[in-house]
Length: 162
Image 1 (cartoon, rainbow, N blue to C red):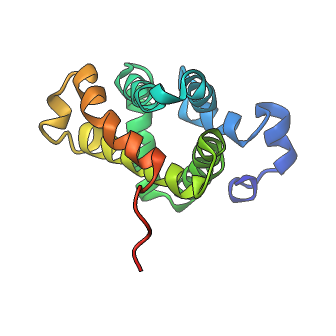
Image 2 (image 1 turned 30 degrees about the horizontal axis):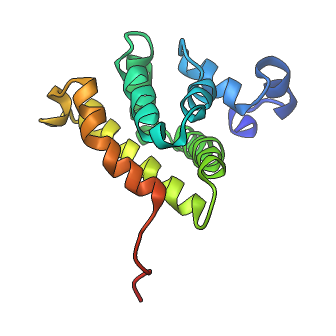
């Protein structure tokens, strides 16, 4: 990422602490995505889907971070370097940390499925503004989607198809 920007990689660590720090600074968010994830991961594992959905919707509906997140999605679709940074962040920070949290067999695949569900919420509710998702209250959305997210996190209950 530093090479793409034409700067010494050590400057990222010096000024921002990490790529995640740079990521947060670039987005100019009032929240730090790694801190939001840390908060969502803490607590009763049985309520993890609700906490993840609550954190996601709170960030996207915040008057400061919501527009920045929408701009980031647009930038990622238009700029290959931004897309690479976003993909790297989600793979290394979100999916990896979520997989570590849920543990067990195929944890990375299950975490990836859960992130796909969350990305679907972002796309339908905040990008496309597709009804009825966009018109639901946060509470209703969380109530309706938590079971699907819970299923993604738990993984299949039957043997894998051949």
